[in-house]
Image (cartoon, rainbow, N blue to C red; front, side, top):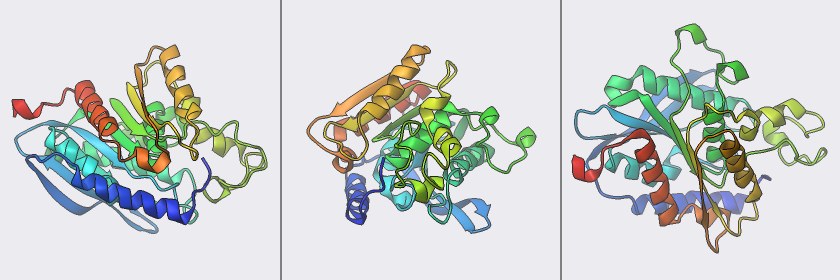
Length: 291
């Protein structure tokens, strides 16, 4: 994935707000600007969408896109609301952005958010054994990396792992995901703002940022969607990720959004419905009719 134009990024934020208006109406409470982590650069915040009722409910970490250097946690608020209306607590986060904060800062923040969710499970009405992730574009890369990595992979961040909840997920869904940077042109510098240099200069960073590198048989089930005419993130990237998961026995669904590119695939109602259903089914969320 190359760094998109400012126009595309702003358009992504706009269509993300449009998605908000398509969210299913349901019974949930929203809480905005909750601090989930403190960094040297300041507080990291989350917006919470918690179903009414006693719970515990499945929890879903919602991670925005924006090429790792822009975007806000409000970008996917519509999908977060959809999840909450279907019996899942959704936690939409902000995270540190490049180039001020280069990889692995973003995945470390996502992992910290999962630990926070599990540490505050009672308040969030979350079952800590049922936590999933959803993201779009850069956010989908991050939740895919969450789904495939564990403590042994060195991306947990500066925490005492002996006293911390697990960051493993039970289901992952997302769209427009770049999944493999290992074959990126050696001297192309379009990801240097995020990965610190070209692949020739920072080969290990490109490897560590690639979810497909960490695929193993104990990964959670995953579902991906992608625009048929996506010229920003090649469709071969998530297709290869799905094939790698299937080869080791992990369930991996894939949906192509016909006739659209990278930005407008995020608007597709069918794709979002499939993601919500996938997360609910794989974490046994109660349906609207059961509540």
